Image 1 (cartoon, helix red, strand yellow):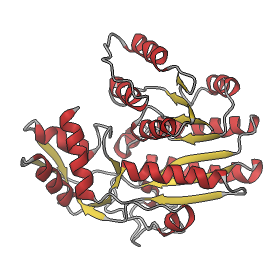
Image 2: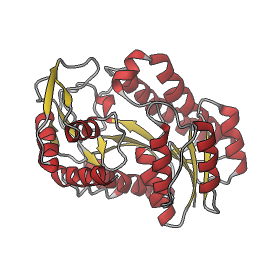
Image 3: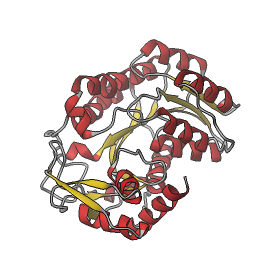
Image 4: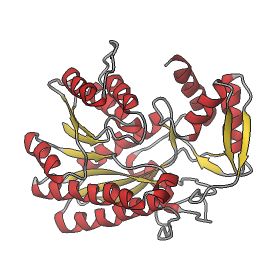
Length: 340
């Protein structure tokens, strides 16, 4: 099968690409290597996904990306440095390849940055996504997986969160753009018969996790004997989901989509285990064998108090079965961090 993966050089996308290639599929990776964090990290993600283990010498971004595209080109892998806001550029890619399914993971991520740059988040996460649906319509591509987020639940007082809960009160622009994607996706499903699954990811972590996210940031700062920014009193809680379980959920969603028609589903992908910030920090300290130096700070605007996924639908519909508990997942992440 031929899969177009947007954001295929990101954290989740590179793991998905790696697995799809292992299974013998073809991948068209569309990623714009934006400056949200160091582009070299995405280059390393890409090299890991295609199992390229030679040293990569960096010079400047433009030259490095050209070299990466040249190195990675193969019969079953194509890499494009492409912004999803550029519909004409996307159209050339769609025209050049026979695409069976689109797996849309690209987005401007992050709750706090979205408060500072809401219009840019709308451009990428809403308009960029609509560009993909427009091209799916034009090229008669009828299978689409879309990354949503647990942030759409906001400060929902009912836990665990289920897909039928009211999610029309987001508390950040990022969450609002993800909810818009779910609603607009249903429009394209109804009008153009695009079979679609919207996956609400719950706080994904593991090797290649973005360096700005808490687990990676805390691990880096503690290991370097630096103080960590600690927001609130430590009782905020998240349903942390290990990357291998997320990839399993995406793959099972793809199979379900390919074997069924008339599909529009929203599905939670979480671990169904709630970990407080205090517990998360203790797990990292234990895995590193070092204590953190805390800098206590107030809660940040846009941060939710708790996330907790009801994964009954995922278990029933696609056979999703996460099996990495948090303590083991943290140990795996820290082992990766210390050897990278």
